[in-house]
Each structure stands twice: as C-alpha cells, then as structure tokens.
Image 1 (cartoon, rainbow, N blue to C red):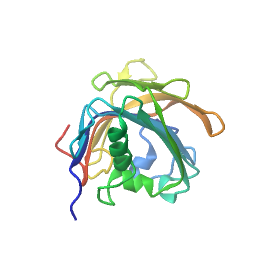
Image 2 (image 1 turned 90 degrees about the vertical axis):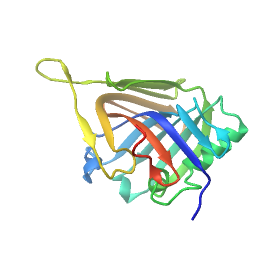
Image 3 (image 1 turned 180 degrees about the vertical axis):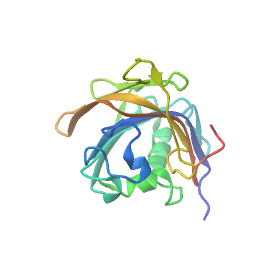
Image 4 (image 1 turned 30 degrees about the horizontal axis):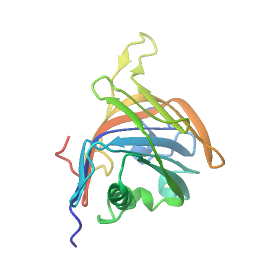
Length: 215
C-alpha cells in the first residue's frame, strides 16, 4: 500500500507517573498501577507531501487506568498555534494515524485510547538539551514538564542512564531523566507527579514508523 510522503524529525521529551526507567518499556506493569503523563515534540524538520512542518511543536497529555496495552485511555493533543490551516490538517492526519501503517507509534497508542478530547491550539514553549539531559515545555497554565538529570543519592552527582530498544516503536534509544509534571485542564484533567520517569530522545517518524538512521 502506498502512503503520502511525510516525515517529522526532532527532539522529543516526555514524562509519566512511573519510576525512573518505566517498567512499561520492559513489558511490565506501571509503577503505580496506572499511567499518567505528557510529552512534546519539536519538529525541526518535517513535511506532509508538499506542506512544510519545520519549526512546529506538538504535545499531548494522556492517562490510562491500568497498563497502556489494556486500553481505556484518555488523551488530548496540543498543536502549535502558529500552524496554518494546511499544517493543522497535515499534523492531524499524522497524529491521528492516517497515511501510515497500523504498526506506527500513533496507531499503536491510538488503539488504546477510548476518549480523545478536542485538540487545543496554543503557544508551546519547548526546550531540550540532550547532552545535559535537561528539557522542559510549557503551555500556559495548562501543561508543564521539567526534566533534569537523575541524581546519585549519595554524591548528588548527575547519574546517566539510557534505555536502548532496537525494535522499539517510539524510540530506539533514549536518555533518562527525572521529571516533574503538571496537567491542569479545568473540568477534564488535573494531575501531577514529581521525580518520576523522564525521557529525552530524537524522534523521527514516517509512514512506516521510526526512521532509525535519522538521529
């Protein structure tokens, strides 16, 4: 089957309620029995057919009552308010799992979502320093994520760790960090977690999934 030519590439950060390392990445149960988190992706380079997507940021919050693969999830997307109508349509198709194989990141996670709220168009303040293992993003008073290095409990020095997933559908390799996160969407979602799982990686995706040689 042929698909529209598209790709999005750039730094991506996320955090969730699990302990450092996140047992979900190892086919385990979430640390607290449920999963709550958020993520953001800066598209340094991207396009959907002839629609350029360079420089735009997308984000989301999500939660599941149990393990992700058990479904019944809830999510809401956020799209950079600088996007024009063509770019919004293109990003909506990518994030919604259109023009791509069913085994891509967006379709795998999408299959676990039972309730999806309407997207919000806002300014997204995004920062990421992969080498320093620091990152953050803000969407007004709605979403906040801060990632710092994990600290050695004895010396206080930064502790470096990575997760390597040669066949992963979201990333092949990610730097680990310590995340503080907060979601406040009136009447819809309100939760927060501190010193929990944080990940920073170069996300590159196309119609067939991860572009593994892109990082």
